[in-house]
Length: 240
Image (cartoon, rainbow, N blue to C red; front, side, top):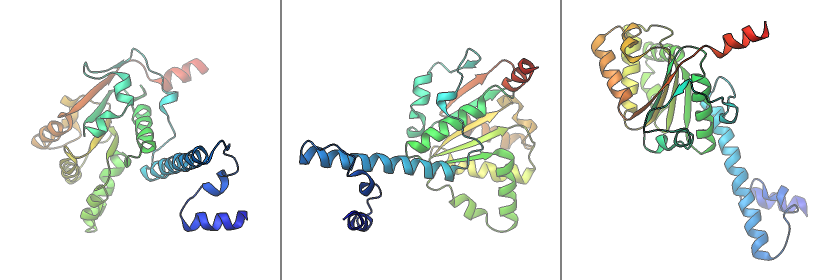
């Protein structure tokens, strides 16, 4: 009988019912069916979240539950921790900019927000900015730039990590600017940077392009600043 049930569940595309139906306590028909279907829905959502996490291509598995909040993180007046973790900024197509010295937790927080967004059903993409620039330049040379732009059509949130560590070529900066212009007021950007906005001209060779890019990025943006010493340095010193 179990094989017959599995086959019918497969035909109905019920991925979990065949494994669950014997585990749900029975009080009455309506209660049993409701709990069985609810469990199917919950497990589907979990599986969908894990698929979205895989597609996002995060560099690590950092989670909000592991994040160490502290006085070194300065939030803007219109944003608190609860609001940030609720991901309401994605629904509003707002950006989150994390600036400060290396090792102060910016990438961890960006990744953790991205992983939670995936579990909430949002399409997310994670890039180290240098890797994205390399991809854009290569795709332009190979005549595939439009295909790369199209990859983001259904994406809700883009994380650009490590802005400012490596300067860009003029072509790379212009290609990135075109992408960010595409995303303006249509997607949420989360950017981590070790540079203040006034220093972004160090990585973008064109002053006018830099000003236009910053203008698009900071419009509808929540800017968080990180101060203090690097976690990695402090951890290494404490181990010594």
